Length: 350
Image 1 (cartoon, one colour):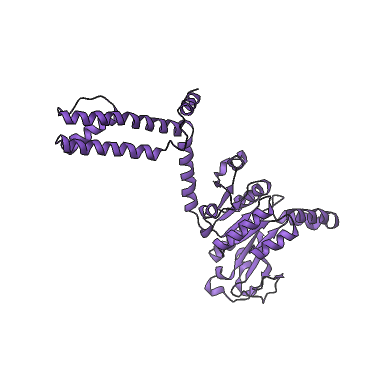
Image 2 (cartoon, one colour):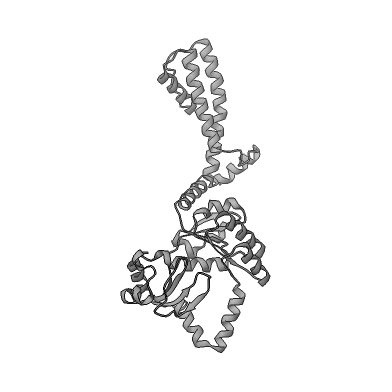
């Protein structure tokens, strides 16, 4: 009821929320305190402490007596200050009441907390869009322990009870705006995923992200093959067409059900403990660089198997032979259980 009363009062006084600014109120109070202090020092020859004390009790309206008798000029000065002070105190109380009761103060505090968390991140992923696909992406990023920042225009979509325990980092805004991407720390991010419903928005984000951070891995969702081609030309590292993948998956369940079920198993869709890892050339210790697979000791020291060799031209060699070795810009794809993946990371110190 109090909230409604104050809202009606503010409307009756035609005071907009943008007018009630806490910083302005603080500046007015500090300015009034300084003016009274200086005025009393000059007009009444008060010491600084006495003048500041008189200013404080005047601003606070506590009604204490004068420190020393005032001259005629001092009384006129203080009378004017008291009249102005009534307006300043009223403004400060209205601003504080609005920010507290309307939730603006706590909203700003929460925004500052999230901004500080974003600023502390480096090498994270930016997820644009928190719809059906965005939430599925978030689940997998959480499962793999990846740090990420969500950008969405609607806070109600991000504040989902399903993710409440994870205290997600998010920014409310339009991801097609460069300043929002910069606020999410794109310059420090290692990757960006845009999963918006509109292909034109996704294309715009790809263009902006490639310009702001050319080194980031950019993954985009697309609904049409035409849009996919444009996104690849714009600089996307990968473009995913969910409908195409879903259709292929369902058709393959008819022709090769066992293969699909095994793929679902190893990609953790059926609660398996199997995981994949990519080993980059630069992640290998200096003593292991350039060595063939048979001499790397990955299987002996961790139990993982190398199932793919990504060449410098982007093409893959499946099940590389024991003589295969990594060159700069290349990587191995390995598969193993979660304990084996952890042992691999410990062995390579990555």
